[in-house]
Image: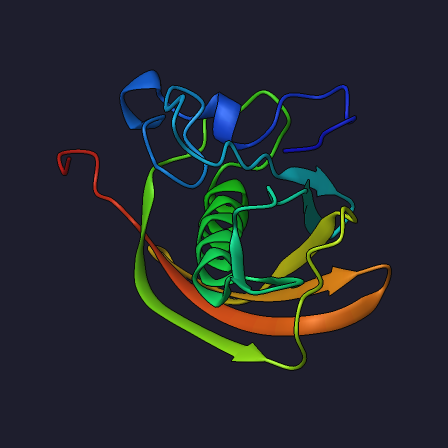
Length: 154
């Protein structure tokens, strides 16, 4: 996990009852602790994988890439439904996750950079496109359909 943005991450603004996700839950000490930040019209995150998060020597495990795309996409969708740095984002769940792996993501100490934006939205659904890169070289692209939970849903 890497973050230097002074504003609170989207995930840190979730209702505490929802901060348990393995990928991004602030209250899940065993999880990845992904932190996503709104920067203009994009949502960005940086993550430095551990040496044991490999698929083959020197390459990040593809399942980890999918998890990062998923959690970053959901955070982007949630932020879309609650604009503003102090708003509590609603909890969203994944309706669809698609990842295209463009090239191996190197596991060499450099951080993975995620960048996302909402490309389509309705009252309860946000379609989010996510790019995964290392040093500005795209290694994967994803599409997440985030669905906003109703207030009575848990």
